[in-house]
Length: 174
Image (cartoon, rainbow, N blue to C red):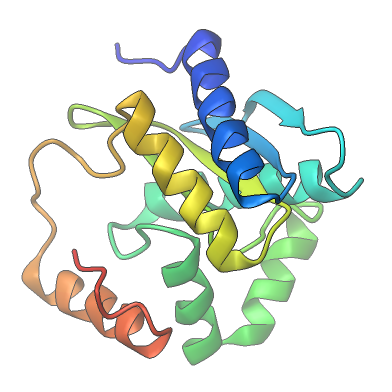
C-alpha cells in the first residue's frame, strides 16, 4: 500500500523553507496522511505562533474534502465552494472538527499513483504567498497533487475551473 514517509515530509519542509527565505516570509508547514492524521509539523523561527495550527488545519481540510470528491483539488477551491453555497457550513465544520477545517491557499493533496496518501499545508504569508511556496516545494520534491490517471469528470473540471476564474486564478486549470 502506498504511504507517505516522514523523510519525504522533511524534504518538502526544506524546500518550503528555501522558498520562504527567498521571499522573506517565515512559515509553518504540516503534512497529514490520507485520513488527516498529522505526520509532520514544523515552524520556522520567525513564523507566527498560530501558523502551525493553521498549516495543520489546511492539510487536514484538503485530506478531508479531497477524500470526498475530486471537486476539491486545493484549499482555494474548497474556500470558494463554501463561499458560494453555505458559508455557515464551513464554520460548523470547523466547530465539529475542533477547529481543524481551514480553507485557504497553500495546501493540496498528495498522490502516489492513483492513491491519495496525504495532504500538505503551509501558513504564514498571504494565501497567495503560501500557495507559491507550497507549489514550488511540491514540484521540487516530486509530489503529485493529482492522481496519475485523470478520471475527473469533465463537469467537475469545468466547475473547478470556474472557481479558479472567480478567485482570479484563471491560469490554473484542471
